[in-house]
Image 1 (spheres, rainbow, N blue to C red):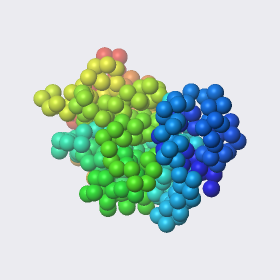
Image 2 (image 1 turned 180 degrees about the vertical axis):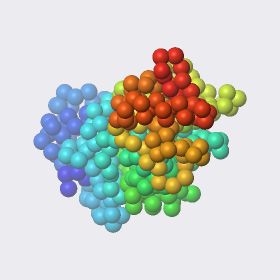
Image 3 (image 1 turned 120 degrees about the vertical axis):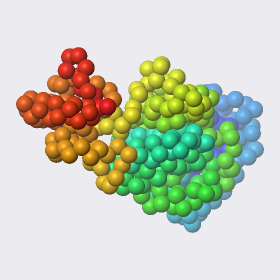
Length: 363
C-alpha cells in the first residue's frame, strides 16, 4: 500500500512536488506523511505555504489511497513511486520529478530513450518524417517517447510500432481518460508493446495547464529530444526548454522556410541544435556503434544504384553532415583501399560528395 500513499500525497495540490520526498523521509513513511496533522507538517520546517497547505488538508480524503489501490487493481495498472527501485533514474535526476506514475503496460528500459515532439497541426511532410524517423530508430534499438497527442506525437508512436520497438506515451490527463479519443486503438497497441503513463490522478481532465507539466516528463525520460516540426510558440518548444535545462541532446528536422511550423526548428538550429535529415545522424550521437538495419521499405532506404554490400553500408552510414575519412574507416572497420574505392564509386553515381580534407557527405 505504501506506493498508493505516495500517489495520494501528490493527488491533492498543496504540498508541492519537491517537498513530498522530504516529508516521507521526515515522517518515516508515505502513510505517516499522508495522515499527518497541520501542526506536524508545519513542524517539519519545510517551505509549506500555509494557504496551500490548508487547501490540501481540506481536500485530503482518509480512504483515498485504498480507493487508488482498488482502481488500479480493476484497471490492471501499475503505480511506480519515487522511492521504487525501478523508478527511471534519468527522470529522478530532473528538477521536478513526478512523485508517482500510473502505468498501463510495461515500462521499457529507457537508457536509450528518444523523445519526439512537434505540432498537433502538422503538415503531411512533418507526419511523414516523424513516422520514418521513428520506424528506423525504433528498429535500431531506441525507445520512442512522445505525448500521445494528435499530429507529430501520433505519427511518432505509429512509426515506432512499425519499427517493432516499444514506445511510451505520456498523457496530460488521468490514465483512465482517452485523449484524444481517436487514439484509443493506438494507446491499446502502445500498452501491449510499451507503456501509456500519467502522473495525474484518475479522473483528471485534459486541461490546457496539464500539458506543459506533461512535457517535462517526456523530456525527462529520454536521453535526447527530436523536434520534427514546431512553431516558435508551441508546446514542443516548451519541451525543448526542459530538455536544455536537463542537458539533453536536441535534434531538429529542417522544413520549408515558408511554413510557420518550421520556424521553431529553424530558430533552434540557428541557436546550436543539431540539424538532422536522416535517422543515422541521431544514432551517431546516442548509439554510435549500432548499425541501422531497416526492416522493410523506408523513406531513407538507399536508392537503387546497383551498389555492392559495402557501398550500401557506406551510404547508410553517411549523412548530410560531412565526415572525415578516418571516422568512416573507424566506424566501418574496413581497410583504406576498400573504403576509398567504394566512396569513389558512390561519388561517380552522384550519391556522395567530398569536401576539402577528405570529408564525405551524402547528397
